[in-house]
Image (cartoon, rainbow, N blue to C red):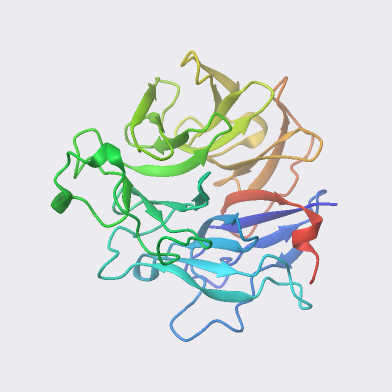
Length: 321
């Protein structure tokens, strides 16, 4: 049996959840999953965003607090206390790494290196992965070939996809990034109302998708059955289907269906339904993707904090070691 992991907006309030919380497949709250009692001095969980299991099996989490922008590494299986043990700060904002600022997500590429979109610098940074033998794990990688003709004095260390501030064709307000089965890196540019596709190693822009239905795209999910992308539109309170081959965009879940209010994380349930975090609705909703009909009751509702990212985690990772 799998369980849901969900991150939350977090903040200063005692009622806000600065941790990843687990829920059963039928919505029962199971508590926190990240160990915080053994964090070193100067490290705290604050405003967590995206998270992913790395090629080494460990769990990597975006710690998005502006003054403590980091990616934290936790053990890949939960310990006897039911929580993933802290291992290290894998990447953090430093003088030689100013591009990491307010990280939104973490994604591992086909080459096992780490890609991080940062909201305050609007770059997608690329960092040596945990199994790297050619560079120190967690350190910024060289700029990709696509940026060879750009004045590197204008680029931040580790930049893979640049900001519009640095390159005319760059990003305006980066959000989710996703490596799709077609091999491309898809990137949401919220302010440009666009989704861009990049070559995973050269960094070359392959195609830009712009459509009035892609208003403020934030989250992405690959839809295997349709060989396309699901895109959560924060401004339209809807979920779209983007066909990468044709560029066509259609409404999958219309505005506000089932109480959807500012869609955030998207994920598939074990039986093929679509789960959507309703950020402002403080709920996790489920839908039949073939009809867009919402299930009669939310999977989870009346959450104390705003849900951000969702992941259905296999039992092997959730089980205490």
